Length: 294
Image (tube, rainbow, N blue to C red; front, side, top):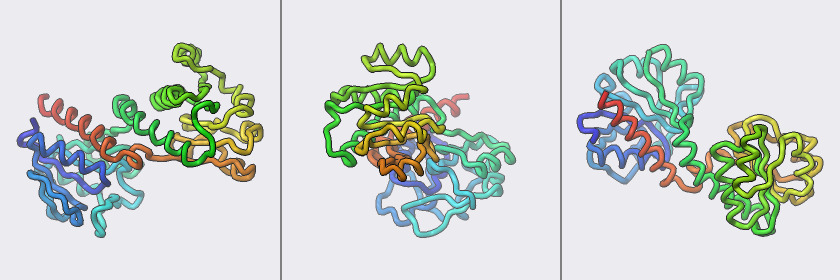
């Protein structure tokens, strides 16, 4: 239980609702800012204006997955008002206050460092990434269906990257009957591809694989789907890039060649916000419990 813990949830989207629900169930006291248009209510949670939150008593601040914008503004879809986070906000909190975010833009990192507050980037955690790979894979399937005129079953799919997302995506498309090729640099990843029943290829072989692929799915956050590979693709080939912005595809050349290439950011929050929120809520609750027992 989190009885006695006081948490400020500042802005966010539908995923934040699952976090609020979980923390109130665990008996934490929650202050909500940026939720004035939310009709749903939670026992143990109170809506406040940002300036009325008693930050001097707050044990943790939960920010949206994107953290804050370069201006310090906090994204919220449940309010027409503006929320702005500043170093002064952090200064008002106790020294033990923890800041939770999905990712941490430079401004947020800088504010946490200058005030000595612990900053937890949930999206950097292996457990969150692995859990999130499930709705990401399902969202990728949805995009493949929406943007092609052929079935996944029987198609040739090249997945680039054998990380936490790549493995789940490759396995999902294989279960749907695709002929899945998996590209990686490390020999142990190529061996794992064989163990999973996939066809491995080295990264320098991508151009040759691109000639036969119907769908190419990239998970590597650096330029790997280059012009030389795109030049080999057939007109119907679909590229789905799951890597963080700006992705790992030469989108300019793909457009020039008439190859459809999609940068698919934030799929968990788009296709399964409830599940994505529950993933964050469960991990965050465990972190708060562990911190409370120290």
